[in-house]
Every structure is written in C-alpha cells, then in structure tokens.
Length: 214
Image 1 (spheres, rainbow, N blue to C red):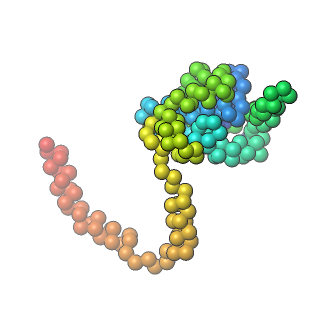
Image 2: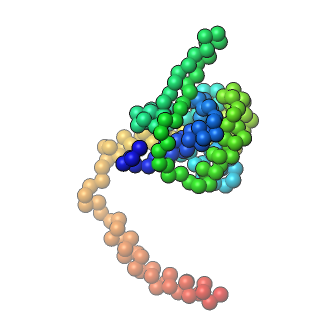
Image 3: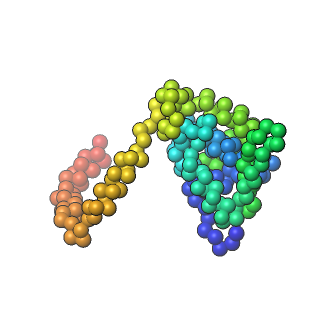
C-alpha cells in the first residue's frame, strides 16, 4: 500500500491487533476483536496509561463494545486492508463475521500500547469469543455497569460507576454554536491577554528568583 498515509488512532490500533494476530496464526472475528481491544485498554488504564484504542466503550452486544469499531471495519475494508467473511453454522445457526487482514499498512501506534496488545494476544488470543465475553464481565468496569442494570452506559475503565452520557449535551452545544457564530471583530480576547501577560512579567520574574534561591 504505497503512497498511502499511515493509519493513526483507532484504525491503527485495530490494524495492529489484526496484524499481530495474523503473525501468530490467531483467528479473529468481530466479537473477539472488540473484547481483545477492550482488554488492552483496560490493562493500559490499570498501568496508569490512557486507553490506547481511542474508542468509547459501552455495555452492549453481550459485553463491552463500541459502534466506532464498525466504522473502522468499514473504512479498512474499503481501503483494501481487511476482508470480512460472514459464516453461519448450518446446525446451530451461529453467525460469525471473521476478519482477515489482507495487507498490513503502515501504522502509527504508541509503543507501550502496542506492547500491551502483544501481551493480551499472547494470553487470550486463542480464546473463543464466548470465553473472552465471560472474561470481560469479570472486569470492574463491566461489573459496575451490571450493577446499574442498564445497557448502553459508558464504561469507566478505571473501575468506577458508569460515566455520564454527554451526547445530548454535546448536541445542544453544537446547535447553539451553529446559531451563535463568533463575529470577526469579537471584542476583548487576545489583546487583553497580552496586556495582562506584560503586567505580570515582573512579578513572575521575582517569584522565579525566590524559587531559585531556596
């Protein structure tokens, strides 16, 4: 995939997980992808790091999931990076969406988070989707969500109660911004900040000298 911009953010995290799984002969379907990536995010937060996937996790589809993953899957499929094969067991009726990496693109991903993905795959990459689902229900974020008894809540990966849903509030702010645009000659702002910065320069210098003398 020459002359293509490297993947970043959530798409890079998904592609890296799929590439690592393929290199280790691991089969990944849509459910496994979500649960493995969630476990990587959870482990990152446990270590005091930000979640590296960049997606928002909610309690849905029998465990943690994010609709953003379906958007990423579509984009990677359109770019020729992955193929999605839908299979159905003729006896049980179980439907599976297996995801196969076709071409490993260039990816920009945090090294620490990449190592966490490696660890998660090494430990859980050969587990079934059902086993991974059951495992995620044992994590504190999911246990807290279950206590609330409400699906679709935003999961707090730090293990606290589900986070408040900000979507409705953000929608109201967007509507307000659309109907209240800033004028080109908005009063105040930068000029006032510059003046205040200059007025306080001498006081900041005195404070710095006192700190250095201690």
